[in-house]
Length: 552
Image (cartoon, rainbow, N blue to C red):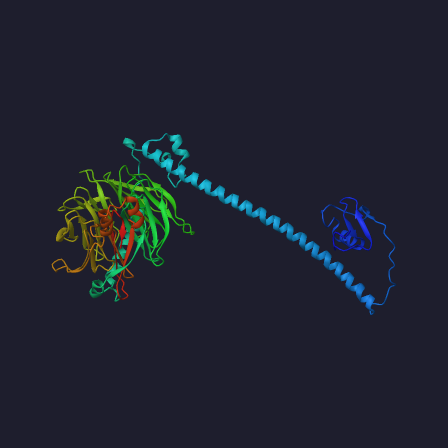
């Protein structure tokens, strides 16, 4: 029989009365003196619990001097005994650590499964809640109080109601008006000293724009991109789609950073707030949402604003980056405090019915321009919320408006094309005839004007009486597409397009009687195309072709 510690035949065998294990006497006594427990079972063990076993008499050699070979052997034996005890203790600790690690990994795996299940149940509950809210316009007060802030929504019970159950707004305070006025004065003074940057893209550079790449973004079962915006400081593009989501796309890496889900209908407008990570989205589900990035890249809805009673068509951010305006088909526009998400003023023109389809702030921030489905462009004084001017002449609803950086020109797009207005004389001084013009945009320097319709056209700006020359026409590379948005950027040299109708390749597949399923597998319906100029520039035009959702 061998010792349970050293594995060798013991010279002085003893046995434990508790475990029945055999040990070398000197080894077990040393272990008991150090730890006070059995080295194998871990039970408490004392010297009284071990019983010697009688064996044949072993004649020990006489004690020799350590300088002799037998003395050295004895020293080595003692060292070996210590090594065996230490090695045994390490093996026991390793075994215990392996068991604890295995248990921890099992717990981690179980926790991940539970978290995934809870997230799925949360998303399903939010979707069901959105469906209920859409079908039940007036929920009981108790239910509203319980569901007040579950998804960033404000409690309806906390808001005062006026006549006809309309929400009462506190109005734009004198402090806010002073802040807006100071911002206007600072920006106006800065404009007088502003010079066009030397790195602005030249006309020759714009004429050499070529396609760079194409990227899928939105879902193909509900194709189409309605709007987009750009976060200049991080080179991130935000798109709002017919699939009721907003997508944040990182242009340098070509990767989707985040998909914002929560709206139940198409996202009609998307805006970044200055150079921050705040994102505004407006939707046909009558809501506006404020999204915040906590720092991990996963955007969360901070506020859901339900002040409109019809589809919200546009959002525009004030130059202070503290306030924004939403425009809706319910004939009102709302002025919001961005930090609290509270509606400070809800404005309507009592003299006539006007369904607002577009909105934009003047570069100085005290003037708001709105377009309507009744073909009228209205100019508002933000301080008094009064309609100070109207521009008639368009045919069909006004789809987009843009103020020039010089503060004098206003460009508006509608079904009959684009019109330019002189804000000093309040008259139309030039028109660009283009069927179904969906978007118009001045570049930040006021040197170029982009128009998105059946194709994308870039014009060189001029004075009221001078000719505005066509610099570049970017064709619809999908063959039958329709541009829905054009954007300008102050750096880089990109152009983006989004197609609406089937591409030539899609038409070719249909002529070969390919199935719709095979078609969607072979050709993504929603793409992002990048156009690159051959030299470094500071002008970037962003245009969108809708319905199949191809961006270039």
